[in-house]
Length: 167
Image (cartoon, rainbow, N blue to C red; front, side, top):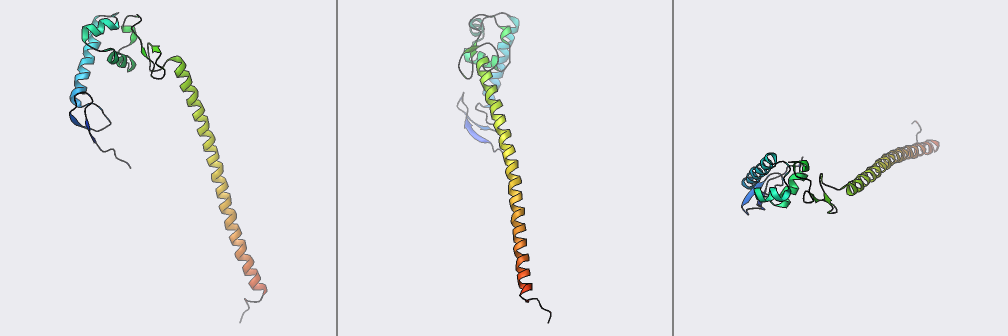
């Protein structure tokens, strides 16, 4: 059983040294500050429905990258923000502007196809492994049978030569 040991890292935001238990890149203090800031953004959007991203950024001090990540993470929906040109963020694969999720429809279709093909390849490998295991087992049985036959033929030869006479 493998255990994940904590790693000592520098916080990506403040630079302080901290212990990362699960691969975190940000210390607990900065994470808490970020969560509080996100709550302010969500509160502003709830209190001012239909605001544009630009208005949200000006009112809260949030940057576009943070708002895009919050929309991707589902912290607030794009429906809560006015449907202007600014209310998009880039697809994680191709960079095309999207309004929800992580990938655009084209990249999502490609990912589905790739996943389906990978699953098919895995099924073929599993079947081949099962066949191989069966073949290997048959080979092992044949080898044991050959060894047994070899011993028996040796015994028969010795018996026919009279080596097993009763004295």
